[in-house]
Length: 559
Image (cartoon, rainbow, N blue to C red; front, top):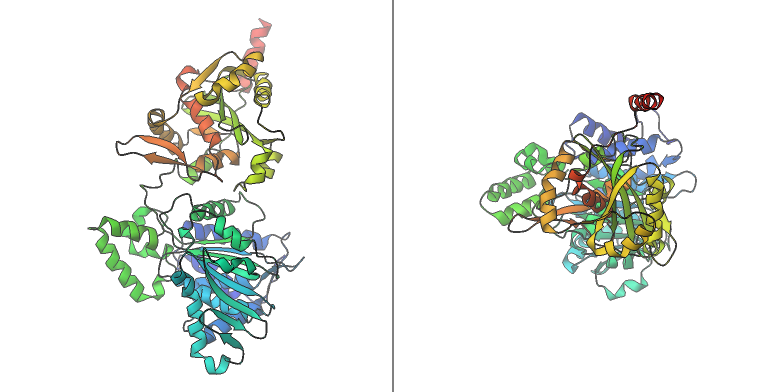
């Protein structure tokens, strides 16, 4: 149960204020921020969580920041500060949130805010040797928040020189022996780090997670370790930022349980909202407090009409809507969710098409059954994962939960032997009439022999590539748009697979379905669905097992 104070305060005055402002519409918030509010309320209300809120520490941090920095914290900044400094679990005093992903439009003041939090963490937090490292891909960017702290101290140096020591490289707080430093992404001195907190600035510039892992591997040597990722959106697709956005989406959608990630994502909900100035606050939570910023953004907006490069920059950096030319998803998330919220009929004895996506013998393999009834297309899958793949990669999906739900089987052998796939289809053939099995030509010859031994002699090649995908794309688009594609109920693996696919277009308008990020995202389930979909015309309507059908069957037996 959450610790609460008396009076009208439900959680904390800064948290309550922000919640109410978002609910009333006084703060115009993005869909993701609204999801965050709902997620946090649920977490704070959950009696199993046993969360303690330290109101005094929150007020102390805000007071110290506003005393020494040349600005007063805005509502969104006070709101986040409360979760950074004043939220712990009663059972072990660990932080409720130890990772903070802050994505907002350029000019919102995120660097000044992170500088203020850095000041608090090395001094007022009172943890000894709690070092803070600011990391960026360039020295200029890495120094930005560091110099904000340096200048804040400089304005009060006569009062603070006995408590702090500083150079243009290091700022230290004498009493706790904590220090603030900045590093570039390729810094050679990072091996000796013992940080309490690492701040990654403008993470859109990171092409992968490798350098980030080098820095974060140093965490854990002092208590209450924290990570901050602050950024606008960027133009690198499939990089670390896209991984963070995907993980944040799954946390907010409730697909990752027990996460300690706090995702604060400010962006337009739709690209068309850029033409409504009142919606800009969704992407920049500070715009209503900075008239000069709003004026500059209005000037940039007018330039968009005549300058394509200005439009791309404005949409990406100011509104956090990347170029749609670079990133065209198969379907909106709401439509993908709808595909697993519909009831899946009991197709006992019904005809169907078997489907396999088998790209690598030591990775993921998906098998599935495809049914159709009227306009609706039904697909249920099962995933086999080679144990080696889990040793090498940390996939952004809850594999343990998928195993519990019967969606995934782990194969603890050198390869994903065809025998496992054959057995799955043999089990399904006891219940369904499998007309034939389709698989990509790349693997069909490898699989054919084992399947033929088991009696599956109808193997059909599934085509792939630009020509096939271009023909299928309008069908897939309509199926999702009108919610006529149905995956097995609550199959979050199929949601994950589908959401990991984007549409790549060439200059002639042809398309291919591609994987958003090659290593940590998987698309096997979606491609298994495509393999079957292209043979839709060869399948008659599947008949679900209904009470009327059962009665008719008994009547036919009695005649």
